[in-house]
Length: 376
Image 1 (cartoon, one colour):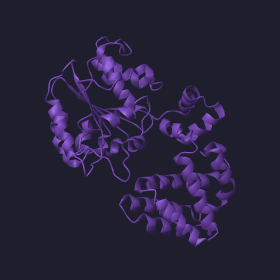
Image 2 (image 1 turned 180 degrees about the vertical axis):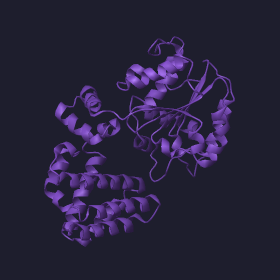
Image 3 (image 1 turned 90 degrees about the vertical axis):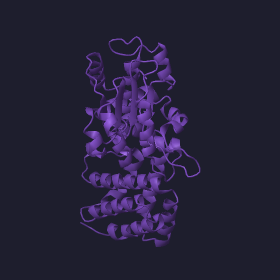
Image 4 (image 1 turned 90 degrees about the horizontal axis):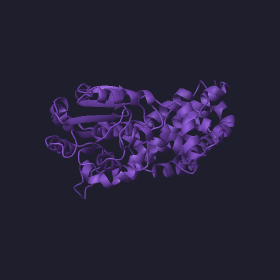
């Protein structure tokens, strides 16, 4: 990955390049920012530049053996660490066991998402993490001399997923690595990183993309007309992954929108039997997808409440969502909006903690009946 392949964050790229050329790159660098901002690509481009045999002022050469190995994700001195799932039938515990999936995940992508990695892993209800076995692998890697480059790089994607046991084993090596070792950590949520890890890093913050940058990305790379690109960019709120996913109306967002409409209509009609069937159908989607669905429901309730203000510049609804909200939004008001949001949030928490999804969803949908009859 070259810096030139990343169409955004000129200021961040300039800052990283100055750190390398000025010999001020820390032994442990944390690149943090919101999902869908291109942080992982920036980290990959930085590593390639550090290990390039003929680096220029603004980018790696892209042609030397080191750059070609980076392009194929097969560099001997580039080590990736990322959350993985434990499979009961196999001893797959560390990142090296999932390199084929990792290469598939990164191939052709400038913007990467947690959900994209879950889909690549086919994680289902499993929750990927960076386990203590990974720490032993990192210590082994860090103790070896660089093979073909002046430095070896250990890139840790989502250090907030590091288990406490793994973190305790890594503290010393992150604080005082070997002279030829550099750690690059890439985080979606720096506040969730264990303080003992966070305190040992120097931080570079990557801002969310502007709506104009998302519009440019959609128009330039996906041939989306300006009007549609603008609407999608407003909904994506700086998340390029969300914007790209929104292009597929048959995907998850479209499915969630349909379920949201069904839930609200059936609750308004007080159709308890239909709500039970709908709750069973939702529960069958699995824990992780249920959590994403409830997050979508929460955003839609908020958007419908804002829709009543009649200020389009504050609305982040697609054309289809706005069409439904034009009729439904009056039913989301000051008397019930907090209660609906609280119920969705509680359902999200319960399902995330492995509560029975059928019971939780049916109970939540029943509560909607009571909420929707409330008037301000």
